[in-house]
Length: 176
Image (cartoon, rainbow, N blue to C red; front, top):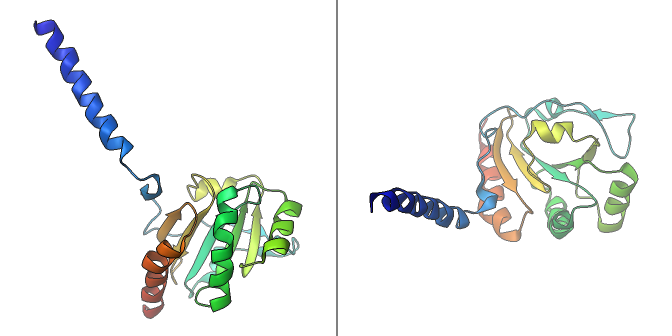
């Protein structure tokens, strides 16, 4: 009888972990970068590869870094929302084109509107690794000091934009 109790206890414990795991939201994966300086980079701009962009240029401003790609279906889903947001001029949106071909990225932006103040190309994905990108799209809210304050995993929706991102941007704008 005793030899059946230990396997039964292990089975119950594993079942409990599986039950809890199935109810977790993959969009709520905590980022170790929250509260830390945005990783530095100096990448060529998509539309003008002779010019580079670095997050250092954004010191003193609240901004969004949106990691996207032309091959990403979810990115196409969030794209109209980003275009609307850009039209309101609430917060500058900078694009990080992730593991993509420049021609494909430019065609996507030319066809669906370009919500980005500018876009940089991360063709080999190294900067995405530094930012802990799980998959595209991902969006980071970065404060005036260059600190990552929020990470949105998955596409921006009207709901998470109005409930999380824009209130945080407004709060960060008030800070000196």
